[in-house]
Image (cartoon, rainbow, N blue to C red; front, side):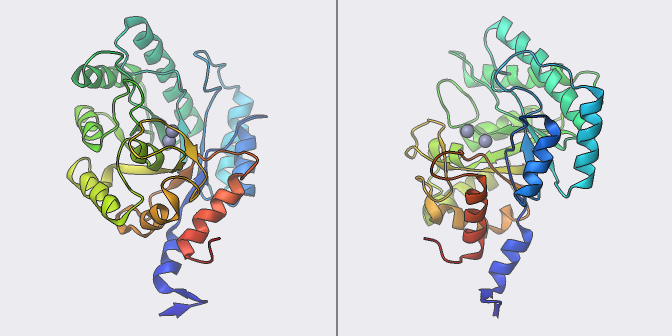
Length: 300
Ligand SMILES: [Zn+2]
Ligand SMILES: [Zn+2]
């Protein structure tokens, strides 16, 4: 059945699409709301601070109020925060873990103040210790970080990794074990397509995609996925290197994203783009690319 030139299935995919980008907070948090609204997003992800330093300035009362007002006036939901990159919840070394717990507690407090729904964090790297040790440290770090805090509606999302260096969480089974070990805590999953591909899930082909979906089903399950990071990969399958690329222009390609957008068990889960802004393409281009693929309209 056709409607405005699209089949009904295609119209449904477009209607269900909750799409946002990781949006810059340069010039202040409220600017991110303006940028995301301008891009026609329906959700957004931000950093609540400079992501590359350990210390962050507390959020000023006025900035918080302005942000909350602008967010309430927008249609952007859910609001996703990505934690700072230095945080290593699974760190083997005492000092790094201590600093990570402090920084992550600060992230949680900021996320609650801002009114975020989700706080995405990478499970961390063990630097020589076993996965089991890393898993234990990661869960204990989260527990310590949120002790005594009222998280309100905030859920912490563990993101699957590309498996660079000694980072844990590059297989769906490891993510399942981490989430299961955090079972009394408000912890769920963020699935990153680029990381999945780089860690060896060949979501670019029918067979590989269905295999990966089966592994999700058999591990943490689709209900745990609260956000999908939608990124193509600049590097090869199983390379264990994390290099995001423009949608459809990388190793995952248009086919992989077509499979993703058509997957009924992933439908309605918010998609966040973390694609580069460079001489080739920008956020608007990548948003349009996803919409194009979702509607199967002409893709050059
Ligand atoms: Zn990601
Ligand atoms: Zn990444």
